[in-house]
Length: 288
Length: 303
Image (tube, rainbow over all chains, first blue to last red; front, side, top):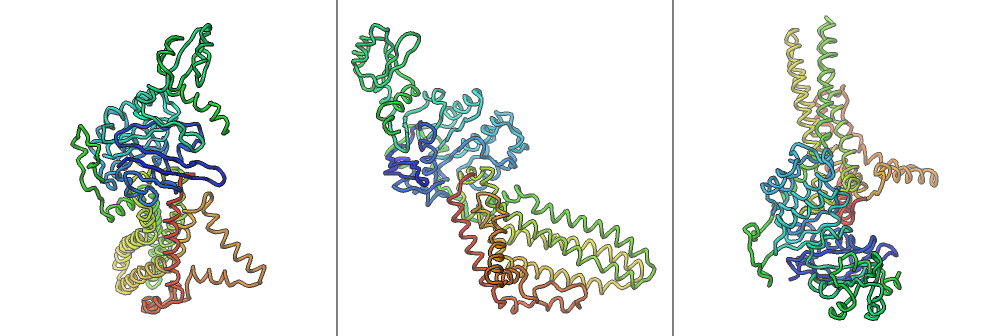
């Protein structure tokens, strides 16, 4: 059973189509980066997966229909929607008590262990904590839950770089194992692309790219060429090109590596470069 | 619910062992109610504060006034006076707290976005709404009765001391206060909880639905219908009906201080109450409002 399986998933708000027939299948033990421009349907997709919004089409998360079985699903799924959802009046100790009270898979001592590594005092209220500390608290709560799926929607939005780094380090080192699945959306792709096992680009409610990072590495190559080799390089049909320090960088999809090596210096591209290329491609532009 | 899927993990950490993970519904409800009390401390602070004020007032004014007169009959009357006023004040406070609590109950969590946190936990919308509804229907009435009991006991002890010191009989006061307490508790459960149930149901329904200003949404439609009827048909059936829904038939009115004690217990007997026109319709309406609130909360996210 895949962790998440969707078929022809659709959702519209009035005349705006947020999800336009999405098919996806995410296996257990993957870390999926869901990347897309603003308004592409990322959050809508995650909301459907989390049972926060009704949808058309088929969607099973851990074998359940999230919309009708949200409360049962949440025994095995955790999510951090964005940084500021912990109620401001809640005391840190109350947060621990409450989650321990309602969640069958919450390990309070584990959460306290995580908190003891921070400067968060249990007598404080959420409103007295800094934004970074609130995220640390939320993360401590979530990491102490033995869940099978963790969904993070822009989890580090508005945090400084130190907290962002800590956040992903904690997630990888203390939380992730091959039984868990993590789905992350973020605009700060560079910081976590080394973490992903799978990648999905979403644009205007459709999945425009879906592959594992191994496939990604084989498929996309970037070549930096000197001005005299631009002609031959273009003949190999790059999907995108840009200028960098007087040289031209061309991005190829599924090209022969040896041929590319003959015209310039071949490197694996970053996710954001491929993202920009895919989003500004003629096919993508045609739809806009 | 299981890890017997084809992907057999290479490393099985101890924590990953699958246990049948459930929390009993009563425990979910218990923690949901505790969470409401953490958030809304006014539920217990406001009635307690009013009780404390009533007690201080009782001490200063009554004791002062009682002993400023040498007329013993007058002194006795003064010592018996403040009970109704103190209890009335506490009950009105509890009602105001309930009204404002209900209006904010399902609106506040959307306004501060914390609904996303609550929905990330395995607690159903039904449990959440029931926990919130239990505040006006169970928690506040029981708590109010307890506060009334404590307040009146303290007042009774003080009055008893004062009466005995003056050589006056204590028995009439005790009888009256005990009857007052019993009939108040009864009044609380019948009128404040059962008869007023649709009021709180309506407020929670509006609270779950309104995207803005739940107070206005709760009040304006009612005013609008009443006004429309008055202008269009020059009649006031709706307002009359509403008044009946809020205050009930005459025998629901809590008897005034001059009612003879025996009558206090008789003013609303259970059979009369249970056969009051509109009681069961009101309870059905309440169930419909709450069911609607459960359903609406499912669709609602942060604002």
